[in-house]
Image (tube, rainbow, N blue to C red):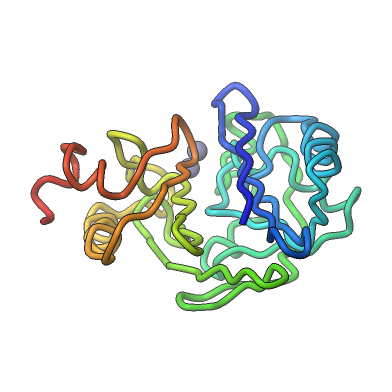
Length: 211
Ligand SMILES: [Zn+2]
Ligand SMILES: [Zn+2]
């Protein structure tokens, strides 16, 4: 599988593009950055990625500022966890209104996800891990050797739990679940640089008390 990362917008939100090496079938995760749909599509085209799905790790404005335009331009269906899907229509719950001045809600998701669901990209399979805490419907997308962690787990940090749907206890359980996965994974967080699960197990102060 091929992975590209495109930091977009004022929050430098990482748009992660996954692509099955054998077929070129791929997914765009978290299309943030206002008016960034063309940049995302150009990168996909130049890498030979056919966009089958648009995925969200969670429904926060900075991860979805190009969402509606990208849906329109590509016709690709949107998938996200069913709990965060409930926020899509309300720009106050996604913070689109407060932080981006966008008062229109998003169209409903074509696909809603639950823990353990599998998303097929050609021969590559993504597994949905429901990791609530930052939002009630935050997920990580896991595939061979990689995890896209959204705003749940960062390089040396974790996501905040004080926004709508945030929950400290749920976050602790979600982090415990990630830390307890066997083996190592390359991590692609929603902000900041890539890291590995083993590096975070060893040096992330927010995970120290969990293992
Ligand atoms: Zn967020
Ligand atoms: Zn974010």
